[in-house]
Amino acid sequence: MRVSHALTAVAVLVLSLFWEIAAHEGAFVHDTHETNIPFENILVAYQSWSECDNATITAVESGVNVIIWFATNLETDEEGNAALQGGPNHTCVEGMIGKLSDMGYGRDKVKHLISVGGWDAPHPDTSNSAEEYAEAFEVFSDGLFDGLDWDLEGNDSLTAEWNYFSKECLDLMANLSRILHDRGYIVSLAPPESYLDIQTTAFSKFVNLTYPDDDWGDDPPFSYHGHNTYAYPLVKEPTAFDFVSIQIYETKSHASYNTTVLGTPQVDYMRAYIKSLVEEGVTVDFTTDDDFNELGVQKLKINKVIVGLISAGGVGGPITAVNASKAFAGLKEGGERNIDGFFYWCIGDDKDGSLPKILSEGIWG
Ligand SMILES: *[C@@H]1O[C@H](CO)[C@@H](O)[C@H](O)[C@H]1NC(C)=O
Ligand SMILES: *[C@@H]1O[C@H](CO)[C@@H](O)[C@H](O)[C@H]1NC(C)=O
Ligand SMILES: *[C@@H]1O[C@H](CO)[C@@H](O)[C@H](O)[C@H]1NC(C)=O
Ligand SMILES: *[C@@H]1O[C@H](CO)[C@@H](O)[C@H](O)[C@H]1NC(C)=O
Ligand SMILES: *[C@@H]1O[C@H](CO)[C@@H](O)[C@H](O)[C@H]1NC(C)=O
Ligand SMILES: *[C@@H]1O[C@H](CO)[C@@H](O)[C@H](O)[C@H]1NC(C)=O
Ligand SMILES: *[C@@H]1O[C@H](CO)[C@@H](O)[C@H](O)[C@H]1NC(C)=O
Image (cartoon, rainbow, N blue to C red; front, side, top):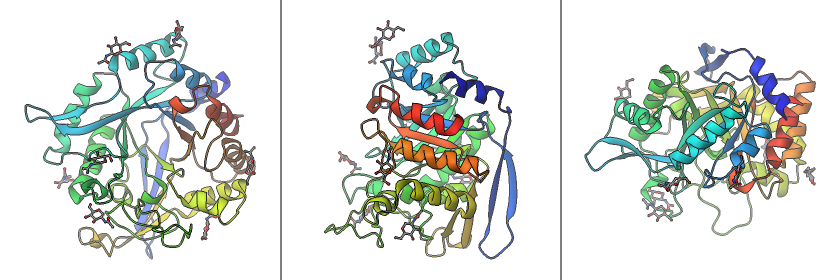
């Protein structure tokens, strides 16, 4: 699997990201910016709660070139200052990064990000500014991390305050991303499928909603979906994000619904999903939102975008790694536009590196 790293190593060091964002009816504003991720294709693995064992090394040997360590929160410390609190054992992270370097997988070949949030985690304390959190990031990272991944989500308690993304929270995401990206850090965004959804133009700051068109026959229906919540920071700071990772393994996702209830073959679904995402993008109607209605209808085309699977016992879900890999390879062979890679959740649930071995075959094989 070392071949994948050889290929990424020869990839051009600075790639341009093209974002096309414009009012629905109008011409595209074609914005070009440099991404801080020096790889053409990426295969991202989330660490979970296994930062001290060797599973990270197995993942990298199996083709992973971005590790996202899990997870910290943006809070206020006891002295009243902005701070990144919680997160992995830094001694172990440092040890693993060192071990990888010794094995030839240095910081030029594998990037290391820290994720913010996660399911049931608090959203940032917005009484601190983005500038203050940028300083807090530097202190927390102390040279360990190449960037930050936004993983803010909802909460199991349906009425919890964290099932709502405040305007301040979304602005803070946009602003802190801008600052860190401009300092050369890699900034990524990991929306669950519904937080950046090709199947609806609806926008909401709530993430305790349903997918009204997907009828699983559940009573009450699953109601932890969002409606394009993450589209706002992307529209606000389109050039601040180095890549976007969509979790099609969100519970009761469209990917799961279409391939199980509707019976669409997985490879066909994956191809159609990728084509829609990269060719048509995501169109979002902000006019129903009191805070953001002046944005009107926006069409987002995200060129550096990857799709994520859950390990599902090393098989991959809701699309298997084999089927996802096949869809990717098919588009590549046809010379068609494609996503830029895959990610998976998580290393701790796939310690043999089954998913990255299969996915890297599709990407680089
Ligand atoms: C990790 O690998 C090292 C050798 O590089 C070995 O000494 C150590 O026992 C391994 N640890 C675990 C938890 O597997
Ligand atoms: C972090 O991991 C190291 C190495 O396993 C261990 O010695 C240390 O106690 C851990 N620190 C915390 C805060 O758990
Ligand atoms: C989020 O969920 C956890 C676990 O269900 C719960 O303990 C916590 O109180 C919730 N947070 C809020 C703000 O309600
Ligand atoms: C959704 O979450 C908000 C809190 O952010 C809460 O006020 C509302 O009641 C919740 N809606 C449902 C249907 O539980
Ligand atoms: C975000 O930055 C804008 C300027 O670009 C500023 O007006 C706004 O107050 C900032 N918001 C937050 C929450 O940092
Ligand atoms: C591919 O998807 C089909 C369903 O469309 C499934 O039956 C099959 O097991 C999958 N193949 C592999 C190798 O994962
Ligand atoms: C999934 O099914 C819906 C119909 O429920 C359809 O509109 C949509 O295009 C399908 N998605 C893909 C990617 O095929």
